[in-house]
Length: 217
Image 1 (tube, rainbow, N blue to C red):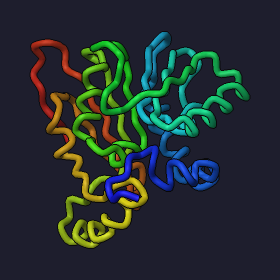
Image 2 (cartoon, rainbow, N blue to C red):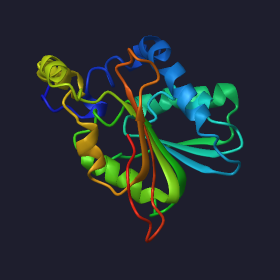
Image 3 (tube, rainbow, N blue to C red):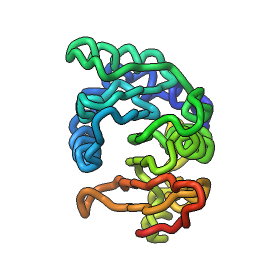
């Protein structure tokens, strides 16, 4: 397998897709549900989730919004569709697509979310630019992911695992600051849902035309 495996070609996203829910539901779902619930998504909002996978997050979205889930891996989408059918989620639809080249028009969605995906794609910069492009001005981008630690000693230790994790399809060296430098965003919040969490939540607003852009830690 190539060192820079694509998400849908990596072991964890293809060969182990059947076990994906069993492995990650308890790890990821509570955090995602807490973050999505905090957004207070308004009725009739249009939501895009980039890298929806097996649909671990779909139960978190309120039924009064319209959700489109996009993923590159057909086997993941099949499992997500089963969840939709079993739960009767008429407000959710799925499409196959590349996070780095979304086919939606500019300024389409009120919320663009992505959970534990941005460090998996080959080109995270393209993904965040695409997320910002399809988000409407005033809309929000929401990302949960593991990012490189700002503490040099911790980053040095974790980064030694990068050659191994890349063979499984994700990287440990992605910096949240480098990612956010790719797009103009405002009211940026970065936080962890618990002091011991390995994952950072990023919530930001796409500025209105002519708005002054600034960030908050």
